[in-house]
Image (cartoon, rainbow, N blue to C red; front, side, top):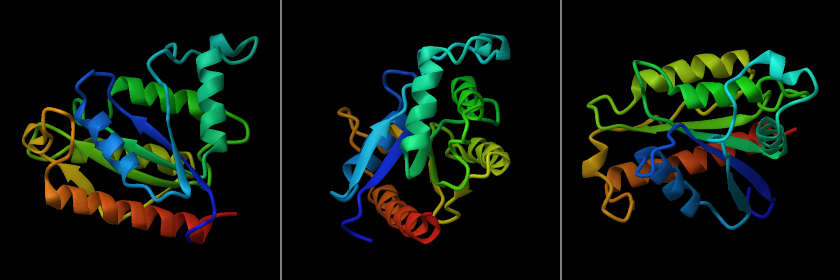
Length: 186
């Protein structure tokens, strides 16, 4: 499992400057072994999904995102929960990626995490994301599940994850994702 280069693409479902999910994704990336490269998906500049925008090809931001997803060996999502689901900006990104040929997420291992100010830690949003991933033929890691609740108490002023249980779960998720990637890699 070590030594073979692996490309990982990370999606934060939040555009907020002080996003706990972006902090969680940064922590995840900082814990990766040396043979794993990490690139963060840029989703802020994507236009709202509209098939009419594809009449002459994909908009440049969508083209870039699809290429990032196609080049990745595995994907990680860190998403808040908005209204019992994923934020619109993440759904929009997934809608654009789903139009790529070949299908960018098909057959790829995926890790899902969430951080939230609520007691449930984004659980309902994660379950909606899992439903979308079924249609896209992605293969999420089932365990561990990472739902960081009461997030303001678990990150410090610099954005560092200070909760040792959550940090341990992130390490476990990295291990599970890399094992899953090795098992299902083409």
